[in-house]
Image (cartoon, rainbow, N blue to C red; front, side):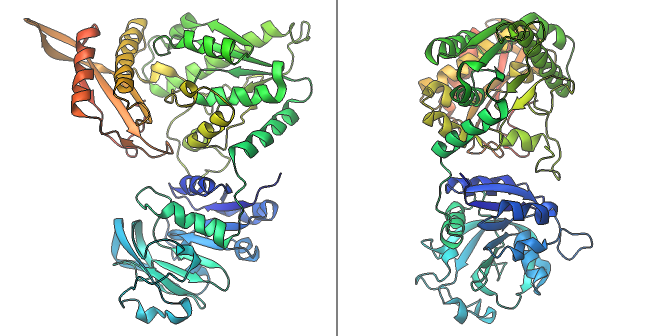
Length: 544
């Protein structure tokens, strides 16, 4: 089935992927296209509409990204956001210049109620009435609403055919439209959470203006992904899935299992870097309840040997990623006879729960060539180049919330679907400094207390991700009548709906006090607990 598609042209904005995600929330499929490849890709994609992202450039500077000819030639509605608006105006004969004042942060948008044909730019400063709004872009939205601005330039003169449909205090042309050609531009960012009505505005664009029916659903994704997996693996191919027990690998395994049945072998590697009692829970859930062929491999010693003396976080990730692959390759060789390959290992595929944010943050060459590498994921950038597997990544283009929706549609248990994300390198990247068995046990115990208290307070689902971090420092304390010199442990809890940006969770003080008291009293070697109140950005969710 071919879905009606919105093409999101990427001009280097940090929010491009959020635009894509918001469109999908309206049950409309969206793909990100690098602006410089638009002329080649848009004719193949045949989009129902095009969104131009923001970006860090100024349209009037030499060498600034331009508007590909294929955008207007496509004959479909176009929405320019921030730099996208300025690019539309600049290309079509308007004028863009540095703003009198830069506008970063919250602003109030006043939507014009007059008919566009009766709204000349000269009347922008006139009071805005509360009568029904003219442009379909603002259908069913309030006439005055908070928005998020982030720009230094602004449109000073509109191209022929355009009129203003909204303004802010600093941007008289905060939203513009050429209704005849179905071209729209907005200076603010509707994709971010700080624009509360932004998702509805984008839904108006893709559903009302572009005419998309909204057929991007978990059910359709499951059906189509099953078909793609069968086509990739073929009628006789076998797949190994590295199963961690998290929602990503669990949903990936469930999709592959639906597609090829017993030709899937799930390999659960107990690397010693898991949370408390997690290994036993994974085996029970997938072996007994999901009826999957699961092989549990005890590889604690190999991983800890690889990590001995290693303190650099990138080296940790790469060593763990490489060891994962070697374990899988050894398991494939052992299973070759079962697969009927004799003495020669059968061609095998490796299934992974790689998600869109993983790809983005690892600076994938697929669609984020302007992005910088933030971290290496073992399931994206930490794999050895000489591995023998072909990758099966059924979730590669999904965001975390979409994965959970698919997991629920597949009938996976709530404990799996809503389990907090757990990185592939496990507790190794929540221990700053060298990873030892003693430090792992300390962190495991403290982390279990934190999660237990969150569940007891009915706040586990409120926090999108929560965990403890063992720091490479000691502090002086007093316990009883004695002086101590012991470990410092940090607690981290964030709220987010996309995992690309996140805010620190405002947990109740009495809850934090109770958690801290329990950790200090119950975990040997810890005498101080701190709470991380950093957002992403500038911090990341994990500490390493």
